[in-house]
Length: 422
Image (cartoon, rainbow, N blue to C red; front, top):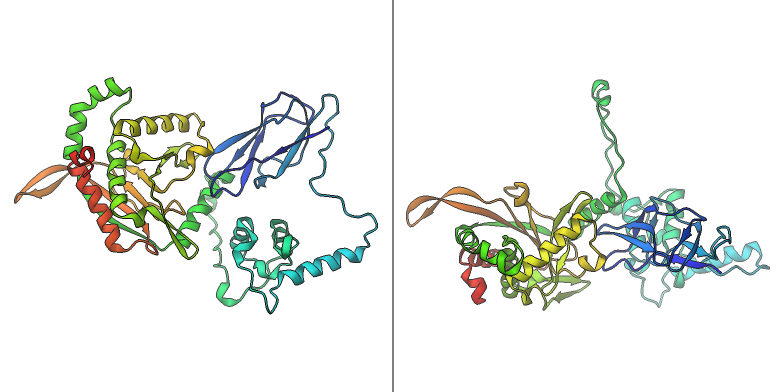
């Protein structure tokens, strides 16, 4: 008897994964819960473990292919079964079904897919995220594809078949922007170039970042902050802090606390758009962007408003270690309501961060450097840092964005506010 190997639930807003590599070959003996295959998503790399002991049967999805949650990857068979093929995922068709029945069935499905005169038109999003993604990338309009899914819905397979036949002509208003071909390099230069195919993970990250730009009315506003008080407090207490709490006193604890206070004052920055509704989050799950050798990941400090600065620093330190070791889980990345990214650790002076959809705000912190500022009519050198808030202008007004940055600035320039919750 065969046991199916399925793609697990991938987490919030993750609709697909790429097969990284199989750890076993068909016929290899496997133990229950032994890692079998590595999956890559745009958020995290995870392993799928064997659901039972036995031998690995036929592998249905090869390295580099894309799969969705619940997809059949292969099977575990009884030892000695010789790598039997897994049971088919779909029910067999009736033996006596004539050839024309399929055509009629497809025709009927196509009729059902088209809205009747008295029925409301189906929304484009009803076909699912995979269909929408393929439509964006290929230019094929799902409305022009005969759906074979339930109630005539267009499936991923329908779209892939349509793409293979060539995109249907779309109205002029919906024409995809042409992709400009890369100009050929000079022969002397071409011999010194190296062409490396993007990993599936990097392709997915690139697509999601571009989707965020295309979907949100994204705008960035700036301010600067005098870090003198925070730096003085950190210098005074860092040794005692580490001795008592077992973790270093960095800047992210101060940043996170300042952000939470600003989010409470300007709730639109902690909200998101869902269709025609605005969803205000009365909780504060702050994502902290962490760079890894595979790309940027954003683990989430959940209920950060309930944590002390020490608690936040411990969480961030733990996430940093897990990210370096490749141990971050889907659960670590879920549910963020706002994101902080600190390019200052790499030396960035100023940037315009891209939203982490569907969030409506992301705060960029930058390097601290001494700059001349006027204090009490005198020019003084102060450790200054630029703040950059990128926000979705559909939900956050300019006044709210500026107010948010001012609240963060006030808290960091007078860190006693963070302790007194002012």
